[in-house]
Length: 540
Ligand code: F6P
Image (cartoon, rainbow, N blue to C red; front, side):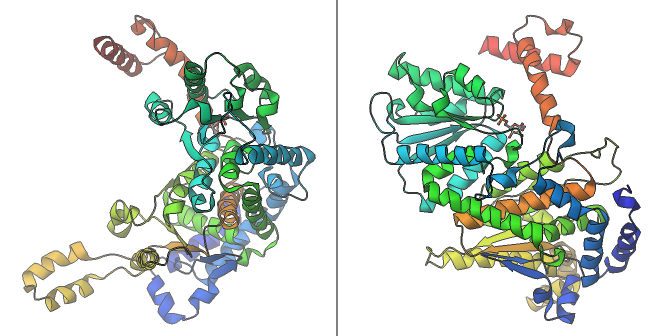
């Protein structure tokens, strides 16, 4: 099989890149008043505008041909059919089965049923704490995929929650995090959800033990299981921790941690918005699955987004990608996608283990606009890096103030400014019109000049509903999948993070040793840092 750069379309795209690199998007818009119609797709409550990209119709034709030459259609079918596409772990990646409610496997249907029952009992207050009081506080303990998905869902959908519970998230091993949270809570009315696919993650287990001790402190040595739920693929380990099978919801090896929000890992979302809302969330993701699987590539939003990314990364040598939601409710979205994308496509070898000689997954960063605007957007406008942006806008029908107009206008104005820029000539003219003396105007003009021609996508949601949020997350999952498929990498393993986890116990052990300088397996920098920490500990 030919590798990506050996495919016939690759050199054609290289030449095409040379041809259009000097062209400007602003000129494209002037030349073609229907450019938006040409480069936009509407799917349910999502409008995808990719007209502010450095592309022509030919670019899209060539990129889709590259996808076909890379066997993308077969790879998409392999994903949905449950082939063992995570080759280094000999597993399928079947998160799409979790949201296909009609055709889901029986174990998924049973898990959803159990999740629904638990949700109902907690929401209707028939699930009581050990002293007979109803649960009022939910604390999710988990990290990575066992944290970011529920956090995103709970924050994004807060306005439709019935506010029955207050919901908190603990991920970091720093005890400041858990102590800060439990400080405000009443153990009698608090439920901890211990979310860990493996039930071996150090951060999660350390926090779970603190939580248990905190419960015991007030409630005594009674049965505390009413205050604990586990979500895990290792129920035996949860039981050893003290959580009975009746309070344990399952997860399966074929669901990657960063793809698990569709499983019982999403329980905090269901608790906050109700199980019907959670079903809507799944339905939205399923609608995106169907679109991804069956829509023509020229209308296929995840495929188009992925190909645009490849266009910039592999032909313009772009290394970063920004995600900026102009929606407070989606503030966690960039963090969520950061894990989904960087853990999936931060790879340097093909599925077969050959070293790759082209760029793969970009550095993903971002935060909500307008905050991001007043933090890092300067570099995107005038810095030396070319960084494509996804602007995510959302209508908020509950906001009748002019804040919403300002928010939407802010996002649109940034996309426009990135695209148009401002020439030195234009800046000079404006300065002279503002009565600057010529010498000062000439000095200032290069500083105020913006190169423009910087690309962005706009994703506009009708509203942040459970359905639309499900669609949006699934869209990015499939974008990541398509890029991984073309780069020929395994988007479903994470051996790099696993190595960090492996080193941790040895260093914890070393910190308690009197003389680390004798340890030949630990480098001198790490030894000196441990000694420094030991001396700080003894003096504090
Ligand atoms: O970051 C590595 C990772 O394995 C993620 O993929 C996962 O979401 C996270 O750790 C937490 O793992 P677990 O759910 O097993 O505690």
